Image (cartoon, rainbow, N blue to C red):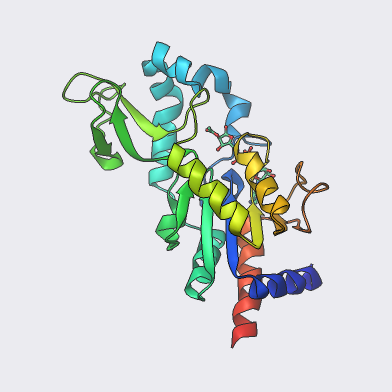
Length: 249
Ligand code: OAD
């Protein structure tokens, strides 16, 4: 692993434009459960019953009670871990880095990255389903479930539910960043959900080097990945950035 880390650090030092494509796995060590695999949310809940927009529209009370209330609480009490910090350290070193995240937890911005594309929206703001007014997360009162806007409409988090399209701006920025980067770090994603799983393919086709960090293999590992660092995000990214910082001393 040490040798691989050294090779990858050299690739990163050579790269001019870097994209980090992240998924739920990068936030596991911040205490946020992933969706798939052991301990994943979709082991406990059927996503079609709780995370599809039609499920929310037909029974917002149930979706708020079972899923959204818990997710909001977990996200609000979580902090960036060494993997989020590592990507922010890379930016501080002067590297041009865009983070494309499927996560809704805001931890990349909290860690200090400034160019973050939230592919699946976020839980930082909530919108009224009727009048579309927006509120910050800490202004959403959960004494009443589902929480309601003064107009009487129900609040929803500004995340992408299954059955909804990716925000146009996020899609456009992601495709542009992927097609222009010369190196992509793919961290903590099962790469099973489209269209997010296409983003590394765009980078590969444009000639980028693909580096995957994940304790498990994914559909990308044997197909487009150039370097696979099989490990948890926090220690692996920390180790990698330490080597890069040492090389720059
Ligand atoms: P998944 O839950 O599908 O996959 C999590 C990935 O993280 C897996 O490949 C794990 O092996 C890996 N993993 C677990 N622990 C890790 C750790 N400590 N360090 C690094 N990797 C680790 O999450 P996503 O790929 O993000 O969509 O899921 C994509 C989308 O599916 C989500 O954005 C969400 C979900 O349904 C929507 O809600 C629209």
